[in-house]
Image (tube, rainbow over all chains, first blue to last red; front, side, top):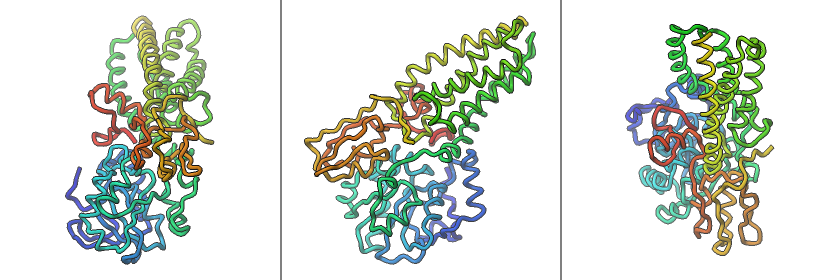
Length: 341
Length: 97
């Protein structure tokens, strides 16, 4: 990770400069491009701004202080929602990770917050002793400890940056709606490119192995096999996340398996893999591909906003043995067809 | 529509006798698990808990217990392989959250 580089495109002053940088509340074309790239996993781990104090508008010693993470996607989402406000931004060093994940890791945490308050000399910049933290920073921060060691009292603001203006103008009150995490179709869809990129990496290895097998195969793998496989990836990594709330069942793996089974059955039927010379192939793929979709869907628990670790562990203990068994048996059937024709 | 995960799995435990009714648990919970009424917090729907640990961290009276962690299958698989605590694999080469 490039810690020494300058990365605050918001203005041109350099990072070592102690003066407070003023940031704009409008995103440039580069910011929007950068966000798109981060969603596809390009340079995602280095998409950072420097920790420290920033000014929005023309804040004075009475202006509110908002605390956030140094992932640039987070920083940009926050500042674009602050137009017309005069406030301070205290950016913690979360190593380029968003607030919620960083709070879970503890990098958006009590110690780092106390450190940054002291490092930027916040008690000299503002006369009040209040900080507004994003609510999702709470898993990493002990509000009472921050107050004890710095004198600043922590106030948890809304979950979404888009509610901050309302929160401030209503006298620092958040409605229940503002306090609740949602997981809308759009929230889920923006996460799916990353799921595709991750499975594409594994897929390249799979294609390598299939290419080698094809050198000695009686029935080589072809376009039809590729399409059936690609469909199982798409079903597990995109369709299941998108349709999550309407697919029957609770376990993610089950949801992925169900859609995978329907998808594979349709494809296998259309290729005639359920009739005699290809039956081995049809049954084999019915065992392999839905299991694959189930595995990818299960991995989406990490991106979801409502799964508990105890729940995921319970799901995995049941799903993984079934997935492995189904996959191995199915693979054996497919390989029998591949080598015996 | 409120999405719900598996039933009866959360490790959340609330000791009402220690609660002083400050209301911070209800404030930080992202799924509205707590509700404060007449100076005491109560658990409204335990099955909505995702074990993020925000309530436990911010309870000044230590009235809440929960094994907080990441509800992420990839993180749990990685922890089985490396023998470390499950954590989002963000520090390595991408992957999670």
